[in-house]
Image (tube, rainbow, N blue to C red; front, side, top):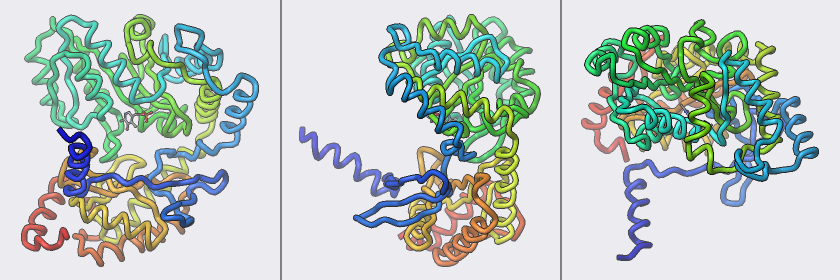
Length: 429
Ligand SMILES: *Cc1c(COP(=O)(O)O)cnc(C)c1O
């Protein structure tokens, strides 16, 4: 076997499908968010980032940066060990207390990322429960799917946000069997929200445990930024709440909060928690500072909601196919991987606007899109500039537009694009 050519073949298969990933080399500059320096082929250019998950610009917040620097100066760069063997630094303990308070739960546990928190917590909880059945929303994130797989438990997928389907599966499993319902609050690619209260009602009715991923909601929703569960007054009805410090909080690290018994079990049994070095003190301090700041300050949340709404209104008024997102996420559908990449390339090359194309497997094939994330720092002028660029590119690539002001449905748009590409197969290049 020729190993090198095997791997080259694996990569060229992605290139053939037009979903080979190219990373943008960026240097963010404090005080200039969402502008950054983009480097390519020895050249430097100013770009506007329109796809960052630093949703509120907290990665450049002065309090957060100071906390980070002070802790690194005082306590050093690394944690020096796993949680069990000398790595449990005091800022990390304080961070976990902060998270308990945020979600009003008995206990919290911090992991090195949100991905790790989902993988470790879901796999451990489902493995510990005898004959556990996992009920998983169709659009759950890759990290949750990794946790489900690694648990070895049986899994059933319910159609996205479909409560009748979930109830059918719960009913069939019966009240005696251990059941874990895993889902997200804000789905990050469509920008829609789960019916959390109804899921909690069903969990009560059929005696199931509930696990929610609030990664795209913490910091941004609820009066103290604890997420959609806080906003909807249902935090106490969900057993395990998972979140990240890497998105709206602008730093790094993931966590779960739950009852003391559940958290202690994950702490004691999860390999992904036990056998890895703890988060360093500077990161823990910076994350706790960000959480504390956003408990008090609503200005960032309000600014984000205002600019996201304006972006949706302005793009859809221009006839661009915007999904009817209920959140800060603004998906504009292209529904073809090659055209999606072409649109993204033109934005970067000709307009200095950076929006990474979103292709399979992040979204289903045929639903490729530009996922736009306005922050409080994307002002009206930047939104209008982006709209003008998108309209010009939509015309140039002959992408389908919709009636001005109308929002679109994923399936209808995917069908329309598939039909169009069938009639004009050359359009895909
Ligand atoms: C980004 C993401 C994660 C992982 O969080 P990280 O802290 O970036 O590892 C988990 N769940 C969802 C839904 C995400 O989008």
